[in-house]
View 1 (spheres, helix red, strand yellow):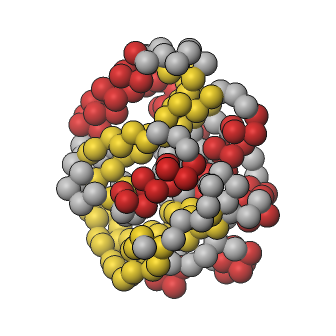
View 2 (tube, rainbow, N blue to C red):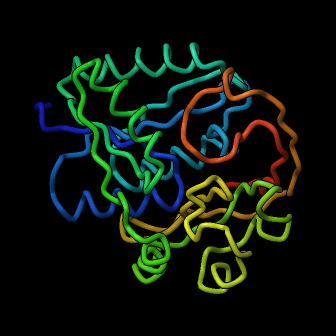
Length: 242
């Protein structure tokens, strides 16, 4: 690997897929790894609740090796940062000097990422930064990507929005004040088809479940100006590979 190689912070969702697509089209930097945080105790993508089998299938069909950063359920900030920095330091030793993110407009989250990564000699790249979110979600749909909502914040969206295909009907149904891309954490998604994949991922919908979280931001990982994600309930749609 060379110093021009990058790690892509992959969630498995819509914004990650579109950002990765743009990087691939640009031809630089070269994406050497996908990196995703997973809940070690249940084997699912952190916050999204997607099974790691489906995450691994995404990476296989994209053709980029996947690194899973395993975290305990509800890690405190110190644990989150220690585990992430340990993994990122390993990547810098392989010659990876850039980290790519699908963030769009959360300025304090970007600042947090840039400060932490600059400390270990890594640059940050944000392919979607400050793009209008309505334009982005329409571009995502027009490119032929297919995604299902797997998690919604009950403060912003009700149960009917989880397990839905992200299409123009879905966007039209979003209540006022909800960002079309869910950039404030209103919803999360799983992408199962599109131009970055060799073929569609075969899956089916499982049960819809509700989970309640209650934890102060000072003890949780991450950052951003969105509402505290650990003082609310979420609806999840389980996805099953087949």
